[in-house]
Image 1 (cartoon, rainbow over the protein chains, first blue to last red):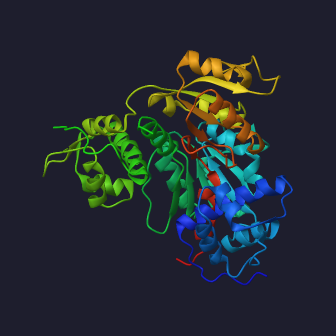
Image 2 (cartoon, rainbow over the protein chains, first blue to last red):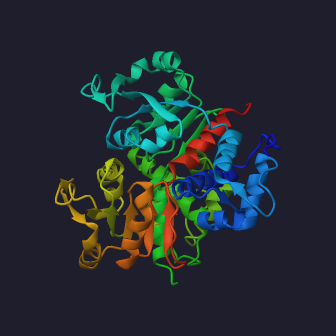
Length: 213
Length: 213
């Protein structure tokens, strides 16, 4: 039985683990697993069982003691508690290789995160059709964001153009930005930016690679 | 003056912030800033000054009180302390759109992280030349890893092929893996896997988007 979430505040680290649980639960669905208890779920996610139980407690009372969780209901409970079980319309600025890769990333669409409009400031790219979407001039961002009900902006420009892209998004009323450009951007406090920085991971790997094991 | 690092253990969160500092310092280099003190550096990175000073303390004594840090020397000190100021040779498995985007990601090469060999199990892709590299059959991974002195493996396969790709890498002696596939992989403790999970960020953005501000 699912009761409403206990709290509208869920810590960032918990949200990130919940995203991992969804990923792992989806693997279980692919393998036709219907019911799972917290320990094997924890093991597959690389955390411990009590952490899983603590995180899932944010979703309210859930699971049947001694039986476990219905995999599909658990996915539904997590995505509904986080409010991600609906369509999110996104605009992407910077139609280079990474931008194109994200456009083609089936997982985005499969989870309701749809890139519905794409932008570039390069006149040679404007008008081109990429994965069924026309590349628009960044100048037209504001109108298109409003027409299309876009809520999230993705930046995949080179680093030196990231700040300008963020400014275009903010001018269009966007307050949630996913930044793939390898540059920090300055925004007022009300704007939420998430950075996907590949070097966070590479530096960790490289540093640990050199440590004695 | 630079003294040797105080400790060979640097916490993961510190490594990730150091990676951010490098990114921001590189922006300062682009803007011809030569000297910076910890507070503006902290502000540009979205952390506080005492955090920056604490993180940089891992590099040993550094900076001149009241004057600040030489931007270029600070980049050199961070990358040298982390041991990332050299070439890292990497193999990539899964030559789809995301794999191709990473191959074309100039920032990787610019920081010494070179993808030197690429692999796929699709017979239609094997032999194809992508960004100057021939796509090899995953069967040949072990020989090529050893010939080419490859230390890091990157997985950009679909989720259902990630585990097999990890197995190929481990069989070839790779112990450091960067996984972009949206799937968790099972590895022994001595293997270090970093997950680049785009949904960690999207779920955070979407959840926060719905919170009152």
